[in-house]
Image 1 (tube, one colour):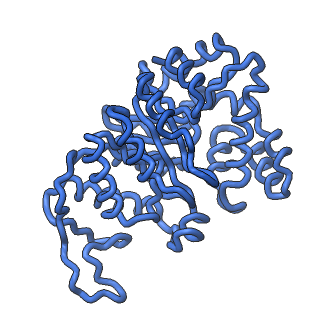
Image 2: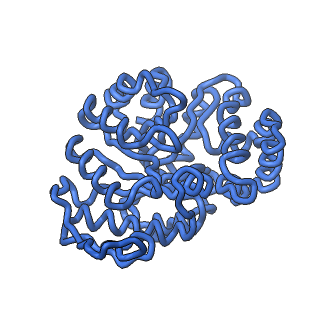
Image 3: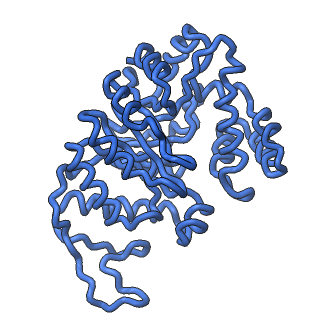
Length: 338
């Protein structure tokens, strides 16, 4: 707890690429930001923009938040990681996540079952590749190497990476929401990428984080919005919450809604989802409690934001990730935090 670092969360693209990707990354580096993260959903991928950014910067760390497990085999993810780590001079942070059943089964055509054991196995294989201690082998059941299942020719053999990784210890972060998944991150990963974290409700994850090893990192996305009217400043936060809690998941299983419920807003979370599925998106956003939106963001007059930053400094969070491409907001953040 104490000093905070700053990062940028550029996310994934919408219908078109971000036109200002490189100027934003270079400005962040110039201002002293520690990291820049990209994401993937079912459009742009996470690795390629980082390669482009890495070619136009020299020191800012390049993170994925997150690479979806089902998008690549563990060895394919390890190959992309070690390649980018070499090209960038050792700047990669590999952020991984299981995504959700709608994406995994609907976009990647794979089963979502047993996400925790899949994650443990996946990361174990990646570490084998990066450590290059010998040929990579894994008994399964999720990612058996060599493969001996249906359709196998029986000719596969354990292989060791031709390329010697620049670093055997590339930091691996996990995107996780559920208590068991967060506990797994604390056990086997180097960092955690929460979706929502409240400095005022640290007890929600205290037990899961208790066993994290020294140096464990937590990089949390926050909205920074300097504005005289707090309620007005919270509107972008509420809009995002309404969409994620209401519609980013199936009605029977929405991890974001479940997290909001665990954070003390169960009735509101259920109502938001009901309204969203009824097509009443504006009403769903209006239902988001100001208290919750305020706790997970930094909004209002600059003196208020400066005061509330102290609450973040008193948490295990190590990096605040800004989801912005606005130069003025980035400069204000650097003045406030760094």
